[in-house]
Image 1 (cartoon, rainbow, N blue to C red):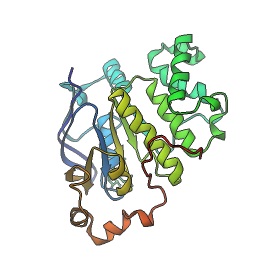
Image 2 (cartoon, rainbow, N blue to C red):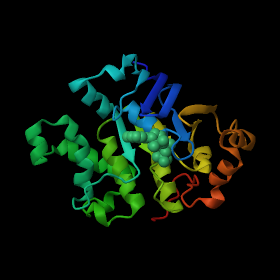
Image 3 (cartoon, helix red, strand yellow):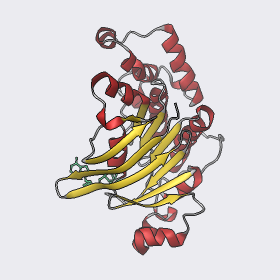
Length: 271
Ligand SMILES: Nc1ncnc2c1ncn2[C@@H]1O[C@H](COP(=O)(O)OP(=O)(O)OP(=O)(O)O)[C@@H](O)[C@H]1O
């Protein structure tokens, strides 16, 4: 059991568009990897390929030596549980309370009937409270999810994902719709889980500064291809200019973005 995630020559076409183009990546367990690139670069499609929301046109994706692209039925469901996915739009049920939303993360473990009835065990409720506690959300446990701030909702989504007991956490632009303070708390939450649980995190980001602040490794995509794969310090302005062009550099400059998260450790003000 190594937990290595390997993408080998992965390609996905949509008609004439090659969204992901012969991507090769090997991600060791416990890495915090940021994927950056302009809109349309293929970041989302790559994450979706990994958790099989999208199937590749060609290439192989394996985890722990198991070919993910070949999984069907129960094995595919198990894989989707192993790689939790966080979305920009939180994907919570607004009218349900926070605790119930988090418990929904356990439904993959339930049979059809208990899922329909949303019956959870005491052990599951304890797990949910513990997950909320890690994200500083216990006071909000009984509040309706729809009444929380965007950043709080995204942290609920992370707590919910934790209840799947995932081996990889995929996050598709998790801070794109948040203000800087909320963005920071969400990124801090992901980083904390990565560090404490040694959980691999693969996160699509549209701000370079956030990627630099949080990620062990940065993968930059352009037109479906991986153009850079290295550490933040290797990603010099010159490299960024090469990858994005001058216009792209401006696009990723923190000065023109509103959601860049600054890493603060856990000095959180409630936002
Ligand atoms: N289901 C689909 N059908 C057709 N084209 C698609 C589909 N999904 C993605 N594409 C195309 O594939 C390319 C890559 O899209 P993708 O969403 O992966 O990029 P991205 O880097 O995540 O951009 P964004 O940040 O805007 O989401 C784009 O040209 C997009 O229009």
